[in-house]
Length: 301
Image (cartoon, rainbow, N blue to C red; front, side):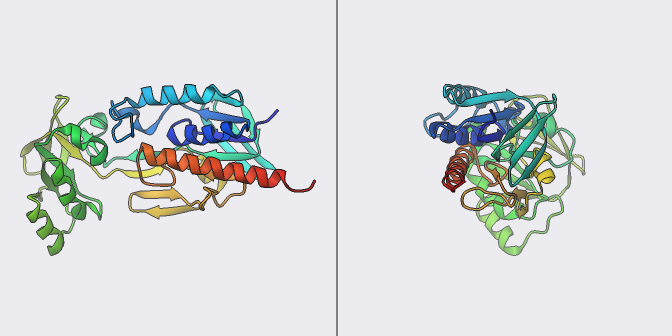
């Protein structure tokens, strides 16, 4: 028998939604490829009651708690194709499975798109970071860099001064007089020579290589990572997307319904946030899906 709900993505939003639906005694199948967005970071911070836990440990415990509910099935696979219509949804996986349900929740998250500079990708999650609230405290102060290039970078630079002695690498980004004054007030140094890449094999610092030949040692370099959908299912289904300062998000209503009938979305693909906010989005989606199921079940046949 088909489940009521298919959830694509078994990370924080997907598991949170699954818990809500399982506790409503609804059959749920979670399809997950095992590639959570925060897999590059060694620890997760700002999680109430679990500050400093590793992402892998947190997800393992959450997954086991979800699977303790007998109405939940977990499929370890990559979802590669999806269709939706008035009668329900269908998802195909890379290993050839075909799964169908009444509703589909997309909780597959986003993929971080780093600036194309040598050395960033291999240091992502250690000394190349994007969120000061997630990682800034652990950097431990000292010299930190903020890479420009995004229209909002200059206005955000004074914020980072609470976590260290900031150098703002402008990357040719125009800086207004107001932004320059705010950076000066907060002690932010502005470096206009373009960054060519980063070097260094140390786990707690790196060197920023500049076009004029200088190298500047930093405890960490924060970069503007833009967001792209982590799954092709969003485009296949035709979900309407909304522009955000960091990329695109799936447009949803208050109950996390997308523009496509019977398709819902939650997590990093619908909001710019962290683990707590992604899980909260999952709770909202789980409630929204349950309400829709009950509404259908209440209609005369």
